[in-house]
Length: 116
Image 1 (cartoon, rainbow, N blue to C red):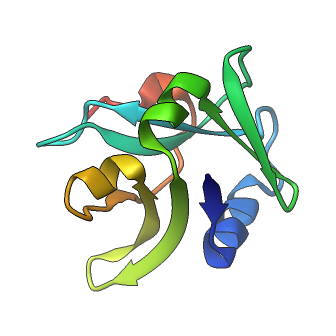
Image 2 (cartoon, rainbow, N blue to C red; image 1 turned 90 degrees about the horizontal axis):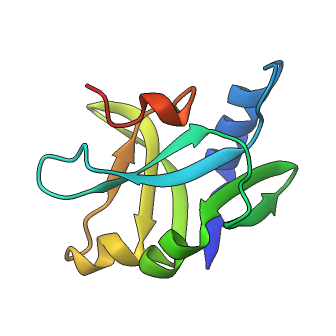
């Protein structure tokens, strides 16, 4: 239902190391995509309606209703000629004929997600 590759997990742990405040990574959907909504990651606090996944000391949160729409979710870290970044694959992207969603960085806060 929820997977994180070893490389993605190591990159996320490095991102969180030494940070003050919120340490949970939220998976959320934003309308920022040019054709379709996209999944992104942001630092956020757990809410009552969240599903929580712990992976090697990292806490991932996703709204239960969103998880039902997009499961399974897999986070990878990829390298290409265009750069490196996180790739989120889900049942939602599989419905889009195998499309993946690039998420180069983890947003500092959910309030900045979706803003250009």
